Amino acid sequence: MYTRDHFSLPLPAMADFVRARSFGVLATHHAGTVYTSPLPVDLRGSEQSGLFVAGHVARANAMTAAFEAGAPATITVLGPDTYVPAEWFGTRSRIPTWLYCAVEISGRLEVSDAARTRADVTGLIDRLQKETVEGSTWSLDEMPAQLTDGYLKNIVGFRLYDLQLASCFRLNQRKDHSGELAEVLAASDDAARQELARLVLRPPTARTE
Image 1 (cartoon, rainbow, N blue to C red):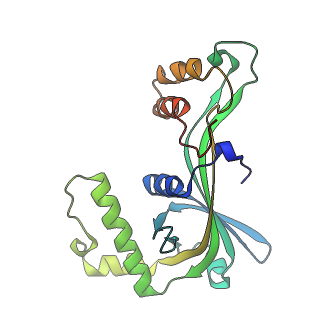
Image 2 (cartoon, rainbow, N blue to C red; image 1 turned 180 degrees about the vertical axis):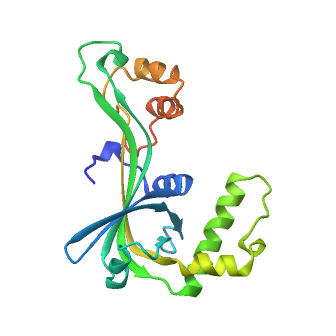
């Protein structure tokens, strides 16, 4: 990912962003073919103990050949984005641009066995249930065993190790008219633009000066 220092988040902020989104696009290659797949992203561990991603894809997905080969892979997690016309800066003397938020996770693929796949899927569901439904106690244990077993047989689990994270949060840093831009974005009925309005006024990037 191409980025600049003033567009980059510190590692803890990147990890928080990925966990808040928990969805991205995995890209890898095998035998001369590039594969991509949108999927849930479960970032685990910490900067001190070692970060890794747990995930899974359908067993029928041809991408699984890359898992067995231990190929390098990259997951891109995207946040809010929008096209910005010149008028939104309160002037006609600005080049239109695009605001966006993205974190890229690169690492080494390792296929998971059945036990680890089950544990990782269970862990992901438990976390997302609690984050999405207040007080949720639902778990895979409520499903008939044959249904759960059938589902798990049709997926291939993986982990992504030796991670390198990069980020690019283009939020009009080091340029003028941020106030005017944020005002227009905040007045939109689009949730992504409203979120960007807050980020433009207070970019979470490591260096904004």
